[in-house]
Length: 165
Image 1 (cartoon, rainbow, N blue to C red):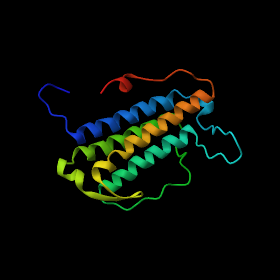
Image 2: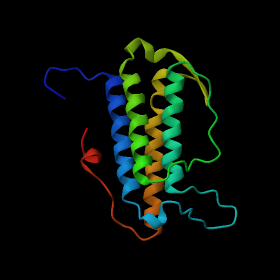
Image 3: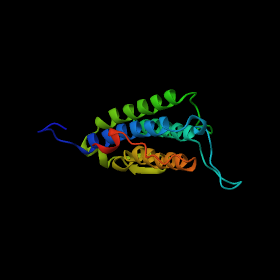
Image 4: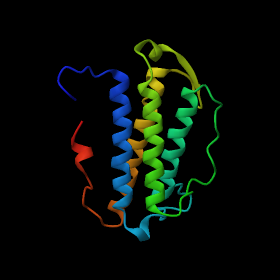
């Protein structure tokens, strides 16, 4: 941030959404190719998802929250979240979905944050709703890290995005 400029809540939140997508993209890109569609399982009823499904879910969630910001309908999650042929295609779509969402969040004014919107989780103030995409990506980054640990990758895959505002 430059000296003399004011960081607003919406600008900060938008930036964190963009950064989370870049960090998650790096986690996906650092996953071994033969483990991108692997679903670790400890028992027959296991409901785990693959790295490609996790990134697909985050892309969907970013787009769904963008729709909520526009007052659009509640979009049902697709049954198959593994929608991308390659890591590059998936991580590019993740960053685009985050950038588009962040651009809309930056348009909000402080008084907009009290407005209640309808989401798949029910009505919620916009101040809470704009946190969900960041929380969602962060949650799934941890799952990707766990998948990496399960196949023996003990390196913590961080970039400058991870250690900077």
